[in-house]
Image (spheres, rainbow, N blue to C red):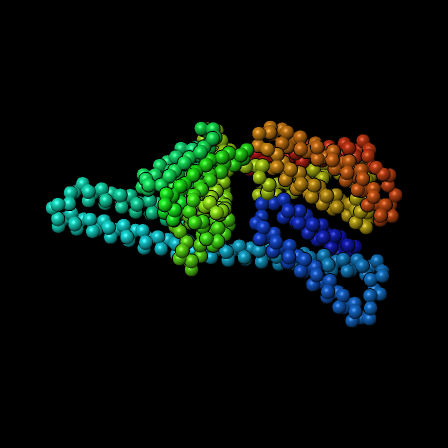
Length: 475
């Protein structure tokens, strides 16, 4: 009982905390969430260390730490403080995210109210006025009145269409592979028709069939950006340049103007992809819609201001349409979503068994792994072996995600697994492990490179690649 509760349980908690840290490093988590969890974990560990230190000083000195048992107690207390701090950080991070989402929801609802009052009510006032004029005066042609009514009604329809995206944060959108150049041309032509006095320039040196992950609102987003560049431009002749550039996994739409530049508040909101606070009445409607929709597309927004003007950049995922199914090329983007994290952990644990059973049968080497952490015991050996497999498996999954999209599936999964297994055999098993064992008083040859350990690592890599590939394809 003392061995289980005083040795194994703290070891499991400490290894689990370390694996959780690796998952935070390779996972698709917000930076603010990772920062919050990290700070709380450090705070919990530091608070426990101070508490133990105060207790020792109160008992008459630091002598108890001279014994191995007392140092074990200290390490267990520190592990407990770190785990408690990490759990508190997870709760605090989720609470911060929920509070931020509520603030954004309040801002969206207030934005809906402002747009309805500013755009819809004003348009209806013009429509009523034209109808009254047409009814009371004979010198105003019916065609002119109907034209104004038609234009204003179309504007109201567009505003109402935009409302659902703002009210729901664009999360209910169905995405498709949208040709980017026709959408950019359509948005630019719409603004050119309503503001013919400005100068417009389009540069799109990209393939004609280039597609991005978006929907039919993409041309409206471009139109909003171009219109802002014209309307808020104080130069004698507003000049707007729209450029479309393509990278391997993304497509960028750059809208540049020669105006006075966006204020600092707007630049910050564009960088974060958020809408303005309900207290900020200067926030533009068009930019808010752009930020919301681009984020729902899986893209990002950015802006730069120079002496020559402002450049707003939309970066969208580049996709290819195959039988109506959109296949994104953004797999090269670093960061594993939660489902793939869980898949990598499960596949790593199975791979640890596939590697460990023959290794234990042939050489009985699994308990030696536990000696790295101070206890040469079969149970501890299997626990630490599973921990190493999970950590290295998470790194493998991150490496797979970093492989460019044009590589074949077989190279992406099996090629990376082979290279990673050999690297672990050479470095982790061949160099790090014997040095570590010698530090804890166990003799080991350096380097420790044997055929049996190579076969074990290849079994681990092959089983991990097969399971992870099958799981990813199922997901």
